[in-house]
Image (tube, rainbow, N blue to C red):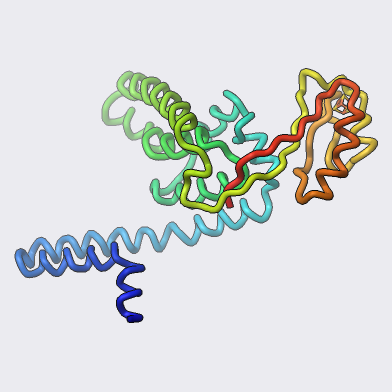
Length: 243
Ligand code: SF4
């Protein structure tokens, strides 16, 4: 029974092994070539993945959720899209390395649209790739392809963001309170910072959020600052967070 459950759990792996066995019987030369290719990619993955997992741990432990939400969250707007494009374009390593990082960013509040932009630019418009493309196919070709690809990536990201919700992803999701300050409304009186310096700070005469509330007590503590804000600039939202 244990063997059956192991096979069920790893059915893809067993299917691949079976395919190799079949090829080995039908055409041993092709099977040996296939195994050689698989070993090559396995070695490549073993070289890349430890670094990627280390990076995800660093993002998880050291990069505050607020920073990711500000940079890549639902409300990061076009600036967030450009940041995602930049991150994907300057990244290094094969595309499969982007998936664990994307999951970590999603868990920290990045939007689905921005994840699509990161993954797509990582896959097709990485800077080293562009340099090689210009060398072999010419600068004009590279520029036209880059511009058209970026347009398509943005369209794809917006459509995916409209269709796919975080709750649809095969990861745990929960609703969490998120704190936001409408920059245009804030008159810079500093009252919120005085009341709760652990949640707000002033930046160029505007209040900014430095920490997200965790738990009911934190939400209650924030209520006073929300109610007392003279311009009603502070807003508490409920957002879908994956973990
Ligand atoms: S209390 Fe409201 S208006 Fe005053 S600094 Fe804070 S957010 Fe801005």
